[in-house]
Image 1 (spheres, rainbow, N blue to C red):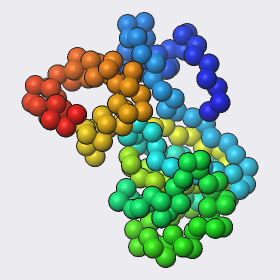
Image 2 (tube, one colour; image 1 turned 135 degrees about the vertical axis):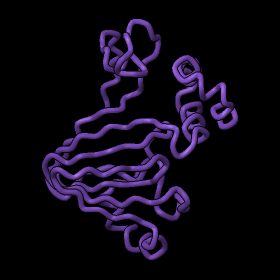
Image 3 (cartoon, rainbow, N blue to C red; image 1 turned 90 degrees about the vertical axis):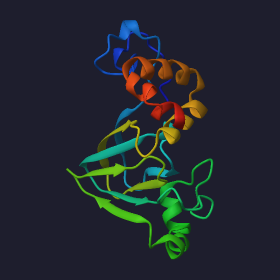
Length: 186
């Protein structure tokens, strides 16, 4: 997303929870919801979603080809690089070699209209559009698989947001702090 416009009137991104009064919270939620449109052979290179988030993607039109890997794979051996290798190139140059090594644990999906793919937090994945494709997606955070993964990701990737977020969690979910569950893993 190349639109870095920080519009203070954008209530959708102004709160931690959609039920909050945006004027009472001094934090902007990172982008988390998108409409994805792309032609054949476009897609997303191999990556892990940010901030320890999970994601879902629902195709409205077209076809998407996915490969997902559990977080235990060696990211260098599957071709995860910065900058990302475009997915069309990855499938041409890396697919056979990677599937020889990790084919037993990789998950491959051809996603059709009306189908939803769930991407667990921490899972490297890439997507290739096999046709002109329109899809909807959203990233979201939960305490699963662990608070540690979630908090470490947010602290590393968005340190300013982390401080405000911790205060909001303590205010909204005090039971996590009272039981020691959150503090022991954060």
